[in-house]
Image (cartoon, rainbow, N blue to C red; front, side):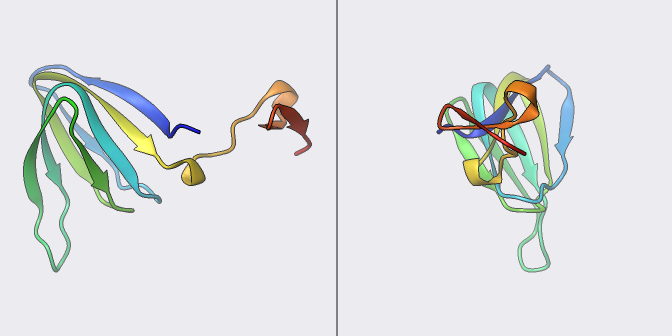
Length: 103
């Protein structure tokens, strides 16, 4: 089973703030380069880093990320399968193993 994910595009010169989520996530750069700032804690200060296409970083629960494409970038925000909401199928029931289960 693959991770639940969203693909985003960052135009050049645009910044995006990803609010901290309730679960751990993975930010993976698909194309381009991203300048990333991760929120810090009392024990570890905020951190800036560059991510190239093919690189990824883990986001801890509650961790905020600010990113900017240089010059532009596409990235995926992945959520582990156990954290993703159940997928709904025909008539709003959950699909599991090809069958339809009641709510």
